[in-house]
Length: 239
Image 1 (cartoon, one colour):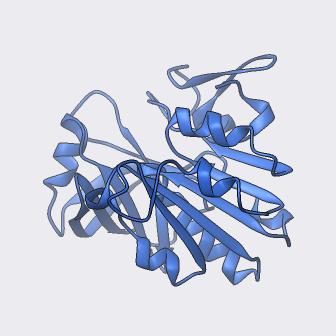
Image 2 (tube, helix red, strand yellow; image 1 turned 60 degrees about the vertical axis):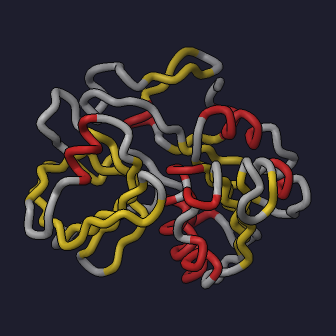
């Protein structure tokens, strides 16, 4: 569904990382889904949903190219053309067990909204969040307010030194929800946790399944991240 949303804040919260809040009346957003944001370029930019409170939707994004640089320059009151919410999110309704949330970099944001929903359902969670360095860390306090949270940084400048796989090996849980770069997803997909769900970040064209720009290999062919995902069972995709 195409809609116009109004920006109510757009600020930097960590190294090259922006938090944008928009007013989106009447929207219902499942945790793990995304919006496709129009910029002046040829392609829209897919942004996962970091939080929803009333009619306010929060996005976090890295400033890495022309499209996200354009978004970073938007002001309060500016209107964005968006498609969404799109895709299939995390299957929260199935679980009354312990869930571990594993995020890396800009894969962290959707897990915050997931965790808020799980907490409201009375489901115990632990979060493991990986970043490059201390100046890249964001939402740490927000996550800690919802439960046990472990931070890792590659250079050891904050939290534990290393990757998310270190603390993940120590955590006992029934279900894993993860979002982040492909190398991280490959690593956590082999975890011994019984049920594992991965949210895949791919470049997208249309966002509605028509262009085949975001396909991902699967055991029996290919899947489209935009409409079949972005969340898949670990065994449904080949990374």
